Length: 129
Length: 416
Ligand SMILES: Cc1cc2nc3c(=O)[nH]c(=O)nc-3n(C[C@H](O)[C@H](O)[C@H](O)COP(=O)(O)OP(=O)(O)OC[C@H]3O[C@@H](n4cnc5c(N)ncnc54)[C@H](O)[C@@H]3O)c2cc1C
Ligand SMILES: [Zn+2]
Image 1 (cartoon, chains in turn cyan, yellow):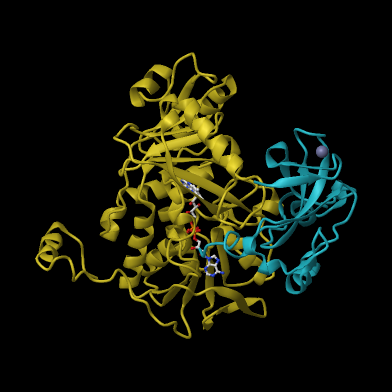
Image 2 (image 1 turned 180 degrees about the vertical axis):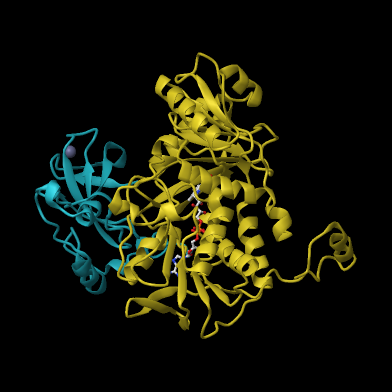
């Protein structure tokens, strides 16, 4: 169960209030009539599907009903940040790798290596498929 | 290969069943093969078996990062049907259904294929129209589909609540009598044993970590056990297909989502058939062991974690209790998830790629188990000839740029 921080309500709420809406930051071609079939097909159907850091759009469906973005790890399911529409992520696949190796500043001011957190080691390991 | 029969059972009883042959060898990888299959799920193993048996190509390796069938093949709820709307899909799934019928004999392995039929329920007028349209399309394609009334449904599946009291009363259903279920891991094991006996190397605990590509042509793969070469490589990796495609510098129109299933404690026989409802959104059948096998929709977000979220479990069970109020006190025994590769038009991709010799068979999403034999067969034919088999051809990845989609969303009953 996710507890998702809505950047508009300024509150952490249960997953059930939200709905995922796929990859964030997609830009619709300005003039669809002039793009190639290739570019139009890419825009319509081809999404990033990373094993790792993903920027995705969610809607606070049963709350403020506003859309916002989440940066989330698709293997551990850890939500790394949420941010309003129109803003850019502060954590990307590249910075997350550094963060993973070097650790992070936690909310209470501590310093923690992400990979060493107990909840990441067993629960979040994918069973080998 | 030691064949299974009543006689062999009696013979081995005399030595307390201690001398049965192993199902397959555990070979060390060779340097070179004619064909490499990446992914040892049902589809990959079926491809290897048909390559060896039908097309005489036995110098084949199946490379599997975990154990055989440990992906979606042994995580699915085993519904087999072919009542799809569009001609292309109907042909593909019906080809598969034809192969299912003789599969246990072909493989000399009991895959427990049981044609107990499937009901796809309709609860609204629009559902009814969709059912009628799909049934008519099915019949034109020679599929034994029919529209049944609530009274007929009651006869087929007495435990189902067909009363007017239900919150979403059942208005009718489509009924495919030749549909059913099969034992999923037996399918993987049967194909694996057959392929191994014809000389195919099954390389378990071997993960593909990259492709060897030169001048736009594939000539092998990198693995955690060293490089292995082949000029034809077929990727059949379900939820991890996108990750593999990335390694070859390709992008696929797939999204990987968790899909979960549950089984209950074993019960005395209570269900006759498979019941699916798109509207209430759940489906259930009963295994030969007696457990209710339950599933529903995907978790809406991307995930590679092979587990699902609790809200989805709750929705799934609400749907089951809505359809079968008598199950409200049944306890669930186990719950798990698999990673399904959903495609924008809910149809698979069986295709060549921009890299010569590199093929993908993926995008089966929530409903590929039923297609295992057919997919393996047409994919093997395509790899053997270097040209896509006519049944596979419409499922080319090009359709996402030409617009020739095969939009099966309307036809899917909970999309399995
Ligand atoms: C809960 C659930 C219920 C379902 N219910 C149904 C149903 O009722 N009916 C139906 O028809 N379908 C159903 N499906 C869908 C069906 O299970 C799949 O479409 C089908 O099993 C896919 O088979 P596969 O062989 O392609 O994939 P898999 O069995 O997933 O095999 C792919 C294999 O590739 C391996 N692999 C991945 N990456 C690598 C790598 N880099 N190197 C080496 N190996 C790799 C994996 O370990 C895996 O074993 C369901 C799926 C789920 C999860
Ligand atoms: Zn909000």
